[in-house]
Amino acid sequence: MENLKLGFIGAGFIAGFQAEALKNVRGADVAGVHSLKGAEEFAAMAKAAKLGDCKVYSSVAELCKNVDAVALFAPNYVRIELMEQIVEAVKGGAKLQGLICEKPLGRTVAEAKRLIELLNETGLPNAYFENQLHMKPIQKALKQLEPQRKSMGELTLARCAEEHSGPHEGWFWDPTRQGGGVLSDMGCHSIAVAWYMLTPAGKPLTFMKPISVTADVAMLKWGQEPYRKQLLDRMGVDYAKTPAEDFATGTITFRNPETGQRVRGQFTNSWMYDKQGLRLLMDGIGPGYTFEVNTLRSPLEVFIGDEAADAVADAEEALEKATASRGLLAVQPNEADLYGYVDELEDAVAAFSEGRAPFATWDYGLEITKLCQAAYMSAERGLTLDLTDPVVQKELDTYTSLIAQGRGAEALR
Ligand SMILES: NC(=O)c1ccc[n+]([C@@H]2O[C@H](COP(=O)([O-])OP(=O)(O)OC[C@H]3O[C@@H](n4cnc5c(N)ncnc54)[C@H](O)[C@@H]3O)[C@@H](O)[C@H]2O)c1
Image 1 (cartoon, protein in one colour):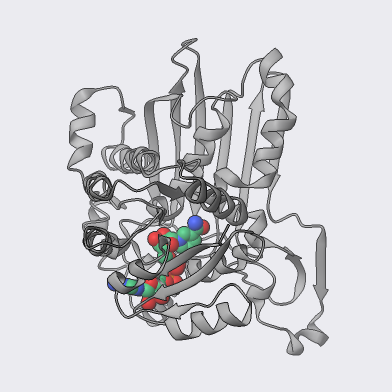
Image 2 (spheres, protein in one colour):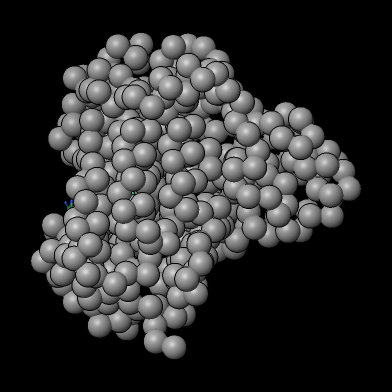
């Protein structure tokens, strides 16, 4: 069978990470790229790495005509216009086998629903990319604990955190383009993986029913001087005018529809975590057993003393969002694999090749968007939100957080 030809829209950070992941995946090539910037460099890198005969296409339509599956790896604020172009290409005869969308599916519930409407016009198999569900440490822990989960009872508490010192591009910091601050950007990951950890073995991703959410958001670092000015100079975003949260935390209660048991998922996310670099921290607690994942613990430690620090390579060589290039560094030898990119890509490639649905689809992405937006609503109103209340569900359909509207000053006191 011929390799599945992947086409990337966007050639930035995640496109690069996925290309790195593709080195570990069989059955697919990156055959094309369309991007506002960086397409030529990306194609040259992909060819040099023997990931495929990657061609640069100047339009979405041309890309769609020449590949088997398209991945939306462009920023959140261009999702809908790009998806409209994909729909047009499919209606115009492009024969695609699948579509991939990175997180978050939408910046609001309305946007996520619009994306699904557009998707339905194509009828294509679809993958929502939530890499953390696929992380080998999470998969292994849940598998290893399967006998305990069956005999003692499932996990009752999942605590998930993703933290680093702040994103790499200005649009992430701008709440009106990104859709909010760290809760919109990384809360979606932690909420998804907590929900998944609490799901009984063999049940679908949305089996556990979300009942309520209590959340809190704050701006702890990036609105204070001198950091506000650093952010303005580096990223062109002024948190005196349009602030976004750099810290978010919350608890979601889920109910098992078969037993009625209630369990809790807790998420914590920040852009003001000043340790070596990105840290994912997950722990799952059940009756009589526990597991813990901490991605800053690596089998590889590198130490670079002050005397030797001049010769240091790029700090990000060690770890995503690395903040230091000397001292004791945690170095992850294969981050693309550790964070789950390899396994999510492998799943999508296999699913599209076999004509079946991938592990996580856009419908699931919509549910994650709903939970994220409900967390904003809870934080804004300072109350626990009843997710079973039809009034709340209706409100969420048209809700845009004050932070995403650029009115963060009213919400972040
Ligand atoms: N799963 C993860 O861990 C993870 C990590 C980072 C980013 N993401 C998601 O991936 C998406 C992209 O993020 P990124 O970090 O790669 O951003 P980025 O800014 O690094 O790269 C975006 C790329 O899209 C291109 N682009 C912008 N507008 C475009 C348009 N209208 N048409 C075509 N190309 C366009 C840019 O030129 C750039 O190459 C976002 O939705 C983000 O949330 C996910």
